[in-house]
Image (cartoon, rainbow, N blue to C red; front, side, top):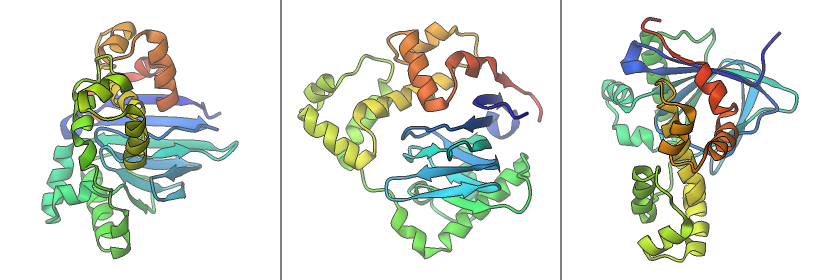
Length: 263
């Protein structure tokens, strides 16, 4: 019997400590969010819907999807559909290595919201397989000129705010504070930020906090301290937000997180 709504994470020794997540969900709807590193996911069973700012589609078993850092998206399963996948969280240095090999500028690759393809057999988790998969995903997309219109909209007007949120995520931040610091009406900021970035400032801040909290799950830091160090005002707030964005509670996530020296 398949165990549903389950997440397990392992920090592997390969590729500078790449993280592998194995997950199974049913009737799960993740809100718009992003990751701070590259996410390479492989669907083992079932299907998922995925949406970006200007497109959405259904992907099914054997789909490979690579999502660059800060590419805002949401995922959800079909009703009564069990959805099982593995995801690798890959550092920028690994992608830069691949970009150099295929003679492509890294920043250009990072400008795409996603790369997607299907494989004919089960995805093998090895350094050779990962590098080959990344190379093929990039080349297939770059050879298809129709993908070019998917590039991200420029978010230069919000660059200072994005940097501020990324650097100060563990501080108490409100719309009123952003209004005073950046001399912009908070209601206008809320509306224009959502339109341009895809999230409100506080949704963006919550995602940053969730992403940074995950880095502490492989340590002995207690959950209540992880919550506070990540910018949540208490453990209850942390638990509610974490489950909404990750699919399981922080306690469940931490219990199923471990480090493997070899793979």
